Image (cartoon, rainbow, N blue to C red):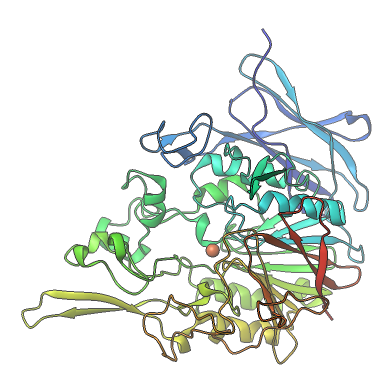
Length: 546
Ligand SMILES: [Fe+2]
C-alpha cells in the first residue's frame, strides 16, 4: 500500500563546527530508520538519534488540519512529533556537500527529502552573508520577507534570529504546519503558502529555502516561554499564566518548579545550540570572522491595563487582589542578567576570552531592545517592584508594580560591559519595527524585525500609550528612553505624511530585512512592499562595522 506519510519539515542545519554540522528534521511517526545521506552521489550516510517533543500540543486557537476557526480542539491536546538529528563529520570548510535525509515510516516505507547542501563553520577570512531576522510569530509578512531575501541575495551562509520565533511555543502547528501557510519552518524553508489580500488582489508568498543550507543561531524571546503547565484550559492562557520561580517555590514547593512557573522546553527541544553554563539559553559561538554572543534577556510581556481581568504590567486585576495564586507579578525577567548574576558573570568572562577578543567582528544578540523607538522598551528592564496598598484594617486595596528606570539592568550593567569590550553591533527585536542607533563610542544598535503587526514608533507626535502615568521621567513617551537619537537611514529613508524623512520603518505593508556581509563589514537593510509581488526590493540603509 502506498504510504501517505511525509516528513513534517525539510531538514535544517544546526551547530556547525570547523569540521562538522548537525542535520535536524521532524516527523509525525516514530518510524524506524532515520538517516542523513551526504557526499558525492550521496554515498555516505550517518544514522540519526530520535527524540520525541515532550510538550507540543494543539488547542482551540490552533489553525491546523481542518480547524480554520476555534472549534475542533476543545482544550490542549498532546501532538506526537519526533525529532531526528545526525552529526555529519569529517567535512571541510569552504566545500559545500550535497545531502538529503531518509525516514522509514511505521509502515516500512522510505521517505526522502529533496537534496540540499551543507558545510561546516567557515574559516576566519571567509566572506559570509548573514540574515538578521526576528519576531516571526506567524505574522502576515514573514513569507514575503523571506522569499525576497532569497530572491535578493541568494543563499545566505547563516541566520541570526533575535527571538520570538512563534507566538505560543507549545502550539505545534505554529512551528510546523499552520494551515494559513505561514508557520515557522515552512517560511524558513520555502514551503510556506501565505495568501495576502490587498483590496481584493490576492498574492501568495512561500518564504525562502534558507535553513536547509544555512545554520541558524537563535535567542530566546518572551514568546519562547510557556507559563504554568495545564492550569488553564488553553495554550494562550497557559502562556499568560507565568509566575516567578521564587513565588512558585513558595506556593508549590520546589518539586516541578518548571511546571509551576515557566519553561522554554519546546524551544530547547527543537534547537541544537552551543551551550554554556546557561545551557542553551545563553551562549557564545565563533563562526568565520564573527564571535556571536547570545543573551537570554527577555521579560514577560503584559498589558498596560487590567481590563478583562488581565494580569497587568502595572497592577493586578481588582478581582484577584485577595488571591496571590492568580497574580502575574508584573513583567518578570525570566533569567537574571543583573550585575553579579550567573549570566552576567558568564558574559564578563566570555568578553575576556581569547575567542572573543581575537574575533574580527564582535556581535551581541538579545531579544529585549536596549535602544528603540518601539513601545516594548517601556517599562525599564528591571525586576518589578511590588507595592501592596492596604486599608487601615490591613485589607489589600491595590497591588501595583513600578520599574525604576535607573535600575535598568541592560543599560546600567550590561551595555557598559559591551562598550568596554568593543562590541561593534548589538542586534535585537521585540518591538516589530526597523530602527538603529549608534552610541558615543561607535557601538551600533539594530532592530530589524518588521514582518507585520508593527506596534508603531514613538516619534514626532506619536506618544507611547503603554505608560502608567503621563509626563513621568520614569516612563518616557517619545523617542528612545535611553537617550540615543535614531540614525536616519543612509540611503533612502521613508517619508512621513508631512514629507519629512523618518528614521524608522514601522509598517504592516512594507517588510524589512537586513544582511551582514562579513567580507565588507557592511550591514545592509532592505524594504519590500508586500502589495506589489513584482515590486523592487529597495536597499535603504547601510552601515559598516569597523
Ligand atoms: Fe518579544
